[in-house]
Length: 184
Image (tube, rainbow, N blue to C red):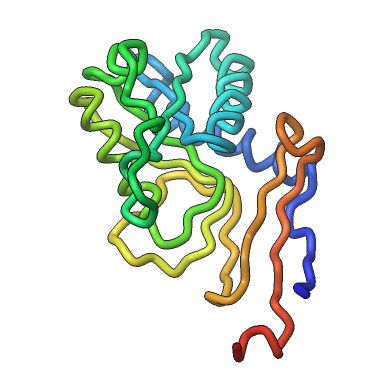
């Protein structure tokens, strides 16, 4: 059994997303030419929340798309049901400043797969990365532009993000395995 501890509650998530939205607007000098692309599943909901905050800040909507990276993963077998990029996503990506959104950044392999998927959609002007939690332990040279919370972890720990839209609650937990489990 693992022990868990909440490291971000609903209000901490809300504050982090609000701060990230302000940072995005500032870094990009507005939102003209920007598109938020959420990585399925939780990244999509985070992208939608960020779009709401940007609308509040700028008074203008920002486009939001969702990216299925299943067929680009190097740690899972390819399945025929994995969706190819659709025409709407291709239209959103071409010549735009893409801000890729994910819940947790760990080894960087999910983001590498997302970059491959985005390139199959067309050539964006640039790609930025926003994550709710950066837990370290990168295996690839990938660094986020926007981070909700940096959480140093051991490789044995896990970070779990729960969002209201699919989990009925908003919180982030860190799971610590008991010492007996670590040695196995």
